[in-house]
Image 1 (cartoon, each protein chain N blue to C red):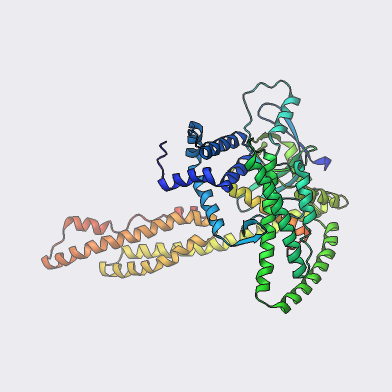
Image 2: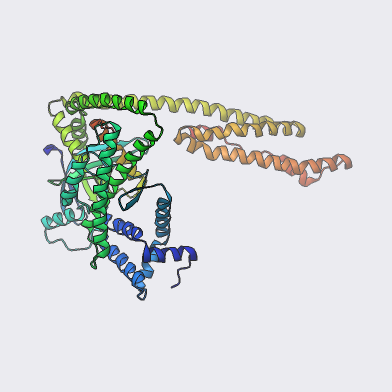
Length: 87
Length: 449
């Protein structure tokens, strides 16, 4: 995954490196989401990926329903692959 | 204390703080899950004040005022839970929550968020420090690794992915439930009896155990339900089928391990390269955290995709997208054609109406009224088109209603005019203005762009 590093500037002129795991497009809402983690951290994070012609930025998903939708999508991704069933 | 709220709700919140431990645990879990320790302290203080009959502090009043509706909701949910079916083993009672989140196989799907607000005004001493601070800000509150003990317990107990005969499964579940309940009781008792404020670690354990307990209860209930039908043969045959399914699952799992989404890495690389060309900024006060199982999924996917041809995968990905867009475009064009037809028909009817005598207008209006049902169909069209067309449809509908109202008014005038053989000038103006402005052809066509 080492090739998927993206350097981002923070609001206070700091720099953060993130490891991009996935970029998801919600066609219905015409929105992109970025699934990533900080380097060497195990927690997977999701943000809204805003793109313009010249730049992009990451925003927090504020809407609980929107987050739930993405969460379900990601959970279904895992479940599709585990093939697990419950009794 | 003046809360300006329903007195029954106020009393139930007071009582909940005073007597309802579940209520307190819910509030604490929620406060910790968003990393709000200050709120957790306030909640604990409020509970102490109500429980011990201390003077209610201003902080408590503010806490209740701010969260009044939420508290009422939580109390209602808890009351509802208590009224649901209860399953009892030993001395512990717990309610069955069909809506509870199921635990994932690998670890809990423990979705938490951190709403720490970054201080934009602080002076940055060095970029490394800032980076560290930023990392701190997005540390999840319920870090799975902190509770390896609880997790191990759950892992050990969770062999749910394979089916057993229902009797063995029931025994296993009852045994697990007893263990889990025991652990929950211990933690809850510790929290209740401790004079210190409970830690977030305790609440994380409680949260995990309760979720797992709900899942087990649900499973046990479903087994019991099937048994209660007395259809043992059916259960036996189902058990047999499940055993077959399990074998298939095992085979499929092995296959899937080597057959995970093949082009994830390729597609990400492709889009990532585009992002790298642009200058990126991050402005995230609160980040969303998903679980370890997901990370494992991605790690495995990346491993699996190493040997794949990236170009091929990317091409396939975009070809799929193109096909999808083509389909969408065709469906939008179909919808547009349909809508154009409807609008043209309505326009023609209005123009015709304008040239008709009064009696003929009335019968046309009646025809239009019947059309209303058809107009409502716009709402079910493609969302974008419907959004553009709907205001126009509403306008047409309003015009129709307006005309009907005017015609009703007019019928009285016409009666009296025919008797007196003369028209009121005011009435003549009304008739001339009977048909309101219609959309021009340009307006109609612009709606489709």
